[in-house]
Length: 296
Image (tube, rainbow, N blue to C red; front, side, top):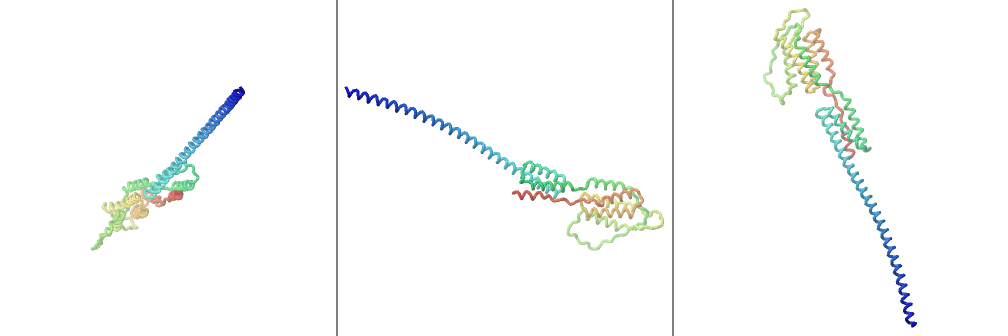
């Protein structure tokens, strides 16, 4: 009987202990699961934050790369425009095109808003100011003005003179030129020959006209040739030839035509006003080209 009771007590104790252990196991399992869920939640949150940060870093990297590439492209474009402006200025002396090209380059550099490119902006501003201060002659208007002189002097008649035509002797042996003469040299030689061919003597006393119609035509043709020489020098922008033709035309008018004539006076005044015109004024050098080499 005692043994049965003792066995029963032991069985009850084991059952109670098992129940207690099961309860602890359930609590441990619940706490572990709760802790695991909380840990998983924190990891998920951190992972989300990390992914967001990584995405922002990638966006910033792409934006920086795009800005760098965009900046490099604009710098390359501006450098090309400046080089093209310098070439236009040297080859064709096209000041207006050079100004437009430099202005476009300046706008591209300014759009970058980068203080590192400030020396280039300053150089471009100096170049633009120098080019805008260049005064170029209106060659077309000048050429038309000489054309008007030719038309105005056409009815002129040489004053009363005695003209003597001399035969110009040619040398027996004429050496062959090493190089063919240019049109300017041929024109000058022709005019020199005609001027040497015509000798005009002036007398203090009034005399009857002694020039034949052919002789008057020759004097007038030389005047026309001199004016044509001025036109050609304008087209070729040859300053030396231009100044020489002006002086010789003025001297020819003064020597062989009535200086009191209104047309002669007007043409002389026009020739005087043309004396100081520079057909090829000195152009400034574009210095901003060298600034692009400094930023490389």
